[in-house]
Amino acid sequence: MRHHFSSRAASAKRSTIRELLKLTEQPDIISFGGGLPAPETFPHEELAAIAQELLLKEPHNVLQYGTTEGSRTLRTEVAKWLGDQNIHVTLHDLLVTSASQQGLDLICKAFFDPGDVVFCGLPTYLGAVQAFSLFQITKIGVPLEDDGMDIDELESRIVAARREGKRMKGIYVIPDFQNPSGITLSLEKRQRLLEVARAYDLLIFEDNPYGHLRFSGEPIPSIFSMDDEGRTIMLLTFSKVLAAGLRLAVMVARGDLMDVLVRVKQPTDLCTSKFTQMIAARFMQRHGLDRHLAEIRPIYRAKKEAMVAALEKYMPNEEGLRWTNPDGGLFVWVWLPEGVDAEEMLPRAIAHKVAYVPGASSYVDGGGHNTMRLAFSLCALEQIDEGIRRLAEVVTETIASLKAGARS
Ligand code: PMP
Image 1 (tube, rainbow, N blue to C red):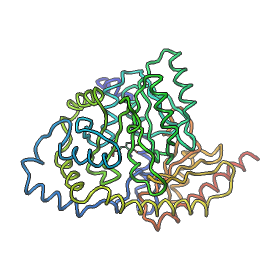
Image 2 (cartoon, protein in one colour):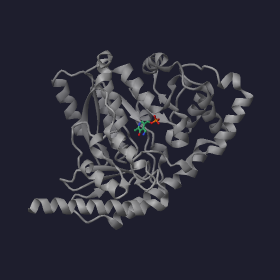
Image 3 (cartoon, rainbow, N blue to C red):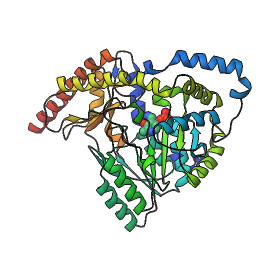
Image 4 (cartoon, rainbow, N blue to C red):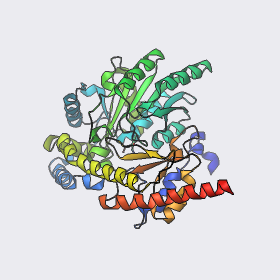
């Protein structure tokens, strides 16, 4: 029956990495693979009490269809919360989505025809790459530096794409503690990014699931808040700050950008679950997201510190072997010495009962073979040292066998 598939669906692939990571669900494997939030951060008792109360007291409301834009109660809470962060929006600037992955899908639908160009980081978020691919969008990668996307490179790639007559639509950027690298875009580069977007009339898709998980250093203003032209669409999600299972996020955009997003969401799902929206809204009213965030950030900080300390303790001293040390988020990124292929190394790691995500799947240019992503979020704190000890053994063995191969 394959001949009935749309050309778009026929080209959609399952992520080989996600398939591989299923292997790592065995209990004796220490997995730094899945980029999942720490389950101990979910305020399940508070959510249970709210859910029960909503079902008993407001069933006619929470079990009903809602508007496509999303619950007014939730949007009011989000607008207040953003206002406290100096991001001033009205309810019309907010669209509730079934988590940010839907936001990415809506961006593809609203702004891209097949062959249109999006610029993204090298590396970038795999789920965004999958969405762009499904919509037959041309992805042009731009290398990341320690302070985020190389803006000079971005500009030269824009100029080259224009020369080739490509239709460019926007730049996809994850500004804080990027997935997968943990890298943060500096303030200066945020300003330059806006200037470049203005000069070439591009949109900016600012996907920021991790900014509120900053556990050290000073917050940097969002690109959306610095944009006085309204060409930035910001995606915020409840997945990492409350609970991923609620599947709830908010898109922030102005004017006709918001209008088209609402129009493409309507046939996608009519509306996001009113029940989960009201759970999040009541949580914000009753407990406050900031208070909750203040409680969960130390959990992530402790895990990140344990991971970086273990990397320093166990990893061999080899040229080219280095890692990021982020001030927030869920991920540490490792560059292995040239010639080490993290995907080829994975079966050896699984045999040593440790797992990670090879970085190459996050590169749209076929590069990144010597990189890997380590999520410090999901493991229990006590497992991190042992997992990194195992991983360092695997890395040491792999480098040794490469050197032996080169000699023979
Ligand atoms: N964007 C980025 C950068 C992510 O890392 C993720 C989740 N890992 C998402 C979007 C999707 O998150 P959700 O759909 O849970 O909001």
